[in-house]
Image 1 (cartoon, each protein chain N blue to C red):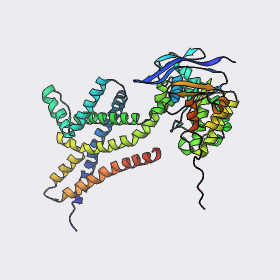
Image 2: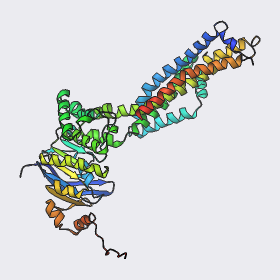
Image 3: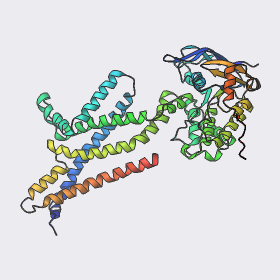
Length: 255
Length: 224
């Protein structure tokens, strides 16, 4: 297997007296797509937020390509440019056009040439089907279009790893697919990704490895087939059962 | 038809004098608002800091200025300082000081409100892109804050222009003082002058403040 680009060891995260993540180890390899599943409040979003230092950590270490990620570390901005994050509520900048949203960080933070970045942004927008929306403002877009824009914005700083934090949770059902297809496409291109989602079908399709978190600990991990077809722990079984529906009683005969 | 005393307006330089009075009122407001914008913005940004002492001092300043009627502030600065500190302030200078103190306090509150109204997720998504703190403020936070601020700032400007009518109490000859002088001077020949002159004052204030209010409403619609 290729080298690990992200190494998390003994990660410990607390909010006041509440332990959110407890002694968590995780290595992510180049080109790997890891889907993180778990009940709400299990710490999966917090884990993603720790990885790009939006949260301080109380113990352990996070290393991206050997460089320690820390909230008051030296090269935090450089590291964050190597980590693309997409949020549940898009968080586009409402006063900027789609193109300006995408170009801001590459031009201002990375000092790249405007023309070159614009060209790349337009190519990426075309790939997600938004080339016609380059000059639109976020308020003129649907939720799915906003989220695709946010994905392009995260891609344009050329990150080594992408973090997706429940990116379809705020979307209308019919817009979920267009966003998930973009993420699948990125997986097929060999991008390294950590994906937190509640879309089980999608998780199964996109994941190389599934990690099941509960109460801040990794309870189970394995290939998607292993995890979805024969979960080893009861906790995982119960979790998966919440996504299937069966009619318990036999249908009432109305005649 | 009732005699509205409008003829007085067109006697001699009366109307020009009213306009000059309006000019004084506008000059005081304009200088005060410029000072208020500069210091109010600075203080508003400072109030974001998690410094308890700073927060307390700012809070105290804001409350004191808000609780005191502007007239009392004018009297303190104009009459009070003359005896106690031996300052020889002109009425206009005292007015500018008072309005700048008041405007700075209000402005700092508006700036603080505009900044805190921007969701923490905007800071986070900008930070996640690897932007520096200065860039986050410059390109993401301030442009949004300014859009929320400007309609409120414009309302403050109109309030300030209207409140300058108080400065006649410390002897500044602004539009209302000029009106009183005109009415006094014409008491014998046009005893009804009060209505006409004050009507003119009303119209002049309206001509100045209405377009400003309209502008605020328009910006609010465009950015809302």
